[in-house]
Length: 116
Image 1 (cartoon, helix red, strand yellow):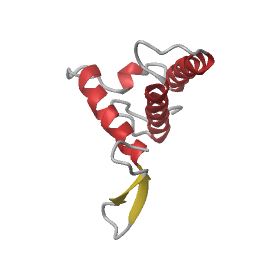
Image 2 (cartoon, one colour):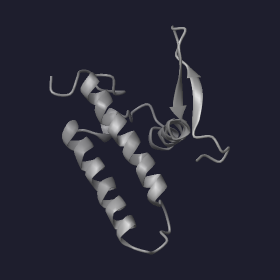
Image 3 (tube, helix red, strand yellow):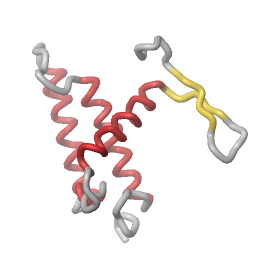
Image 4 (tube, one colour):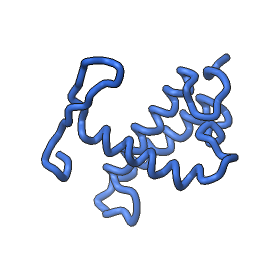
């Protein structure tokens, strides 16, 4: 559960009269993505796509690396000095979203859909 004690928040969907319940962790992940974007892409030259130069192969490698990190964390009883299980899981969500955006042709800085 989030710090506020809520598991879900109601979010209005733009251009519709609908609203849906969204897990609070999705909001946290979106905020993390925005915050990290400021750190990683602080120049006009770096786009999100530039971090994935080999398309889906690059995405798969990053997801694999994070999955290995998760396996290491759950296999040991040590407290990590840096990103723990929760942080690693949030990164996995964001990396998966980046891959989907690349598939859909909406990844920032990519001129076409992955595979075209």
